[in-house]
Image (cartoon, rainbow, N blue to C red; front, side, top):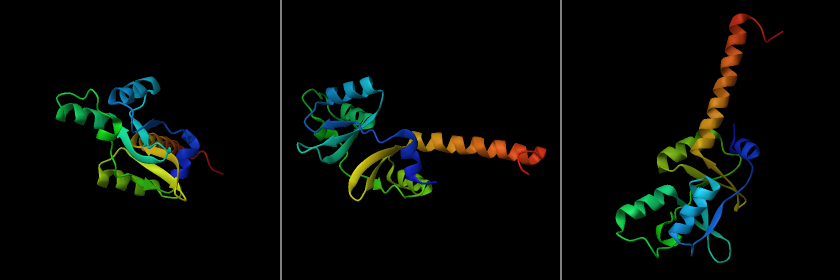
Length: 145
């Protein structure tokens, strides 16, 4: 399976936030959208980083007062990305190696989606269920001609 399979199932929606937004704004966005990750954009709407719940918690642990801090102060700058034709196994390995839960998907330099660890788990579970049904059919002698 490939990254494009997951994007086709979940859609291309990207949640974005300005680098000038406050950390509180990011937390409120996460609560409203029921997410834990967003693309950080500059004034020209170009992606310059990402912000996650983990980034916010780490800021809370490091600084006595985060009031007045901006998303740009805590965002992750090293963007991890893959193409839509990348195999899911490569994405799993990249997430493990880079210790990230989200990978950006770019096509020709354009950001077209995000794959999360949750997306990979959901896809893996669906594959396991299909394999289980096929195995039961094989053992029982049904499901094929």
